[in-house]
Amino acid sequence: MVRVFIPGDTTACALGANEVAAEILRQAQQRGLEVEVIRNGSRGAFWLEPLLEIDSDHGRLAFGQVSVDDVFELFEAGFPRPCEHETYLGKVADIEWLERQDRLTFARAGLTDPTSLEDYKKHGGYKGLKQALKMSPAEIVDEVTRSGLRGRGGAAFPTGIKWNTVLNTPADQKYVAANADEGDSGTFADRLLMEADPYQLIEGMTICAMAVGASQGYIYLRSEYPKALMILEQAINTAREANLLGDDIGASGRDFDIEVRVGAGAYICGEETSMLESLEGKRGLVRFKPPLPAIEGLFGKPTVVNNVLTLGAVSTVLAEGASHYEDYGCGRSRGTLTVQLAGNIRRGGLVEIPFGTSLRTLVEDFGGGTASGRPARAIQVGGPLGAYLPASQWDTPLDYESMSEVGAMLGHGGVVVFDDSVDMLEQARFAMEFCALESCGKCTPCRIGSVRGVELLDKIGIGDERSANMDLLEELCETLDGGSLCAMGGLTPMPVRSAVKYFPEDFERGLEDL
Figure 1: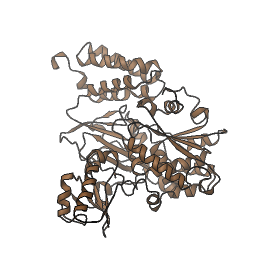
Figure 2 (figure 1 turned 180 degrees about the horizontal axis):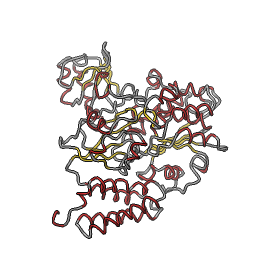
Figure 3 (figure 1 turned 180 degrees about the vertical axis):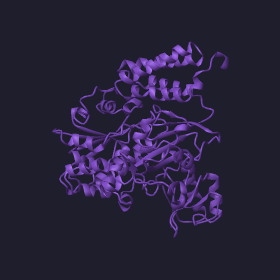
Figure 4 (figure 1 turned 30 degrees about the horizontal axis):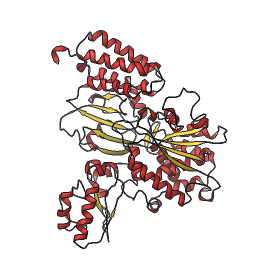
């Protein structure tokens, strides 16, 4: 029987993967062929989806951007055996876009059946937890600290320091909370990991629990991810049945279980304290800090709050060792960076590369330039509150310190490309409007300042007292930056200021230009 792999993740399905899978089964049945269709996770090469793969004596062979209409022709050409067709891409391992990446966190993505625990273990899964169960909590924390792993959710706080705080805070109950409320525009890495390799998140959370002494974990999942919810719940149940969650994990005498909680569509709940409020059944409002969640977090108990990618990377650190992970990257940015290419881009998808790769290399070599074919003008890095960077900044290395030096941030690794038809005043306005819509409303600078920002940019857009209003806009940005309770308001000035700094001509038009 020939095995045919067709991704079952959200993006692939949106591009027709379900229909292609059904047509393959129909064609095989009509021809009396034995075919097993496996719904694997996507490799993140969304520009090639639906991406079919078949087993062969030479490894996995790929057919890219296969439509329902292509299936009949494929079978006529000899599918599911290796055959010549315009969608044939050769060996998956030889696809340059994938070959040039350094995949640690996403090494299994697209390779396995996401819900198969056997598949996960066969490809190195649970090796990290096996190592962790031989170590003391302090030794696990030390290993994570030495790896240089920093939070992948945007703040880039050293993971080991956070874990050490929770470990050394006495309490009768501790928690691990995975922040899967991935709300930034142009980001999808958390979703892809949960849909393509869910056991990696489960393993990472379990290792964390062993390190800090937590007995309960929560995955706070955004409501727009129903497929991830289904896959996570299936994987969690399977892990429980295999004694990899629940009481006395692996006969270690240590207990830990995980529950998935679904959010209600509030962007602000991506902020860790708002997420904790929501997990407690309250309205998602930002908390004052201190106390830090690591000391008084969920239900007032010490809590590790980490992003999905951070916890996913932990399994690699424990499986391969701190030095192996630290060997990737540069400076204080260690390991690999997971970038999501989106917007006006020809080859969109997920790219995992060492820190230090330039933005230009990422967008031009991996992304292939704009989808429209027009020159790229601006690239926003770090989500809707990240800076807009012009061509003069595209040789900036993608690491935390280098991006900070040019007034930008990596955030969650979202990269959105705009061609030369973009209006940067409109993009600045979008940032203020986004803040106004998504603010939790707890602090005045964010709640009121963002509304005033939209009004100011509308006046500037029609040339109304442009100079005075530009000065007032900068004063407003200073207030948001210095007076907001959390990063929602504090970061809103970043895209606005970058648009003004690098694209001033878009702010100089008057009524006669409209």
